[in-house]
Image 1 (cartoon, rainbow, N blue to C red):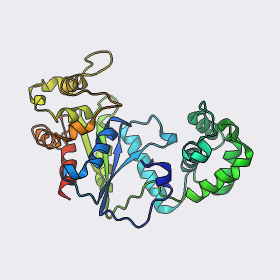
Image 2: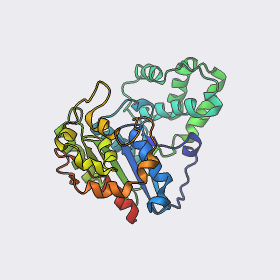
Image 3: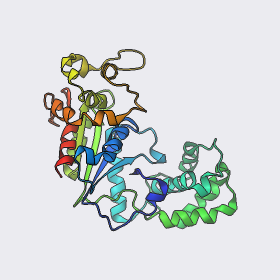
Image 4: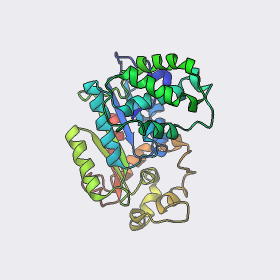
Length: 314
């Protein structure tokens, strides 16, 4: 996992940070939650959040594409933070760095084929090593080996290996996540999807977050319910149907279908600023549903409003 920044920003993260606190947000989904919290970050002044508070989304790396289970996401986050702390890197981190640099650094990206598949590259590398979780003993040697192996699939030339290698070695020690447990807050934000997020997994994630002093934010049944809380009409909707969240059609479930009655919504693209204008209403509406993390496992509700309230009070 890594901070959601442009490539150039990630490669020059300053050790001297002027922010008073960072809130790191780890989402179960890739798009919906990110759109909403990006709008919050851009509208901090309007909402009443101290501009010196930095809100940073954590996104999946190339080897994590498609992940959505909260337990799996949390376990990988803990591994990443452990790597940062002990200074030892896994093959997974090295592979992500190599692909990140080739796919996102303009010097190389402009040359690669549009048909290049990062998933295919990752599978090729997996076949050459025992496990992506294994610790790299010689970064330069292993990096050069992988580059020689995959360079043709990126449609790059052997002559470009030294430049890529130099960039990887220069950036490998840059922290993927600049989290300081003494100052910052790590927040895991997930849906209570009973089909994919089992009860024992919920309990495990809740206890691990408590142990690591992470914040655990849940919306039951899904993030769209938090968005629906931005409208007073939520109180007139059948609560049992909201909690069950059955399919309303072949494409959408009940909560999303209700949200669309009051707001032009698409999971991958929507105007979150229109919702942010009603954020205080959402915080108040949430209080009339379950906000307790112990009970959210089974009850309709959300505690995201508590996060927004905390951000406004800092």
